[in-house]
Length: 393
Image (tube, rainbow, N blue to C red; front, side, top):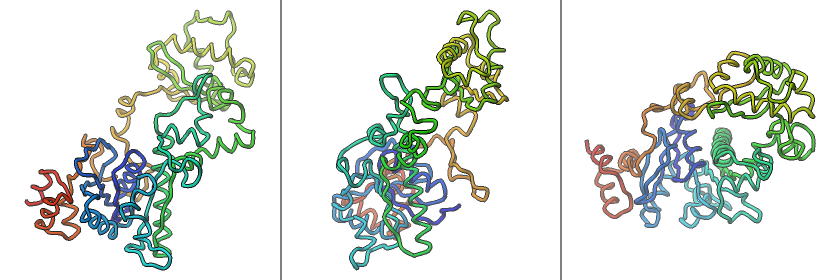
C-alpha cells in the first residue's frame, strides 16, 4: 500500500485529527493513538489503528512520548495552540530551531486547530458551526428565510480540517523525499473551509455567477425550484438537480407523465420545459413540484426517474445507503495499483479501547515485558488486561 512503513503518532482527539489519521491508516500507515490514562474513547474513526495509554503528566511519560515521536514519521497534534509546547513536545524539540539540531528532523509535525494562528480568534474555543460561521460559508448555505442551516459538522471538522490536514501531510512527505527534512503542517478549520469553498466565495466576492445574489435566490442555494429537495406522499424525499435545460426537459416531461390524471393544483397552469428559463414563473413551478411530489411515495418517483437524465434521485437514509454500498465507508478515491484498505470494513469493531495495544507497541519499540510492566506499575502507561495477556502468549 502507498503508505506502508510510515509510522504515525496520533494524539487522541475529536473528529478532524482522527479523520486525518484514518486516511493515513487506510493507505497502509502504522497509526498509533496516544490516549490519556483512564480515558474512554467513543471515536469510531480508528480502523487500522492501535492505542497506547501514556501519562504525559509524569516525567517518565513525557520522556516515553519524546522517544516515540523521535522514531515517528508523522505526528498529528489535535490540541489547542501551546498544549504540546507546555509538555516539552513542541515542534522545535524535534525539528530544531536557530541552528540547534532537533531529535527528529525528518518529522512531519501536523497541527489542526479551529481558528487561524493569527487574528482575534486564535485563542478562542469553538466547534464546526463556529468555524464555518467565521469562514463566510455558513452565511451562504440554504435554510429558511430567517437563517441558514448547517450540514452537520462535515464542512469544517472533516473537509476543512481532517482532509486538508491529510493533504498537507502528504505534500510534506513528498517534499521530505526531495530535501530529507520534515516540517510543520498548519491546518486551521476556518482557512481550510474557505479554501474548500473557493468556488462560491470567489463568485460572491466578484458579484457574478451562480451564487452572486442574496442567500436563497441563487441557482444552488435553494433559490431555483429545480435544484431542491421535495417531500413525497410517505414523508420521504426526492432530490432534484436538473440544472441543464436538456436535463430539466427530461425531468419535467417524466414528472408530468407520472402525476395523477386529475392533478390540477394551480387552476390549469402547469410547467413546460420553457418554464426553467422564466424566473418569474419559479414560484409557481415550486408550488407545482411541491404538491406533485406529495401525490406519490418516494420509491414510486425513484423508479419513475431511474435510468434517465432527469437528475432526480431518492434521498436515502444512512441504513438504505449502506445496503447499496459497503456498510462502512471505504477509503476513496480508489487507486488501480492499491490493495484493498486494511481491515474488515464491516466487522462492527469500530472503537478501540484505550490502551488495547500498549504492550504490542512498546515491544515493537524494543522494550521487554519486564520494562513495560515496570512502567505500568508506576502509572506511566496503562493497558487492558486482554492486551497484556495476549502479549505474554
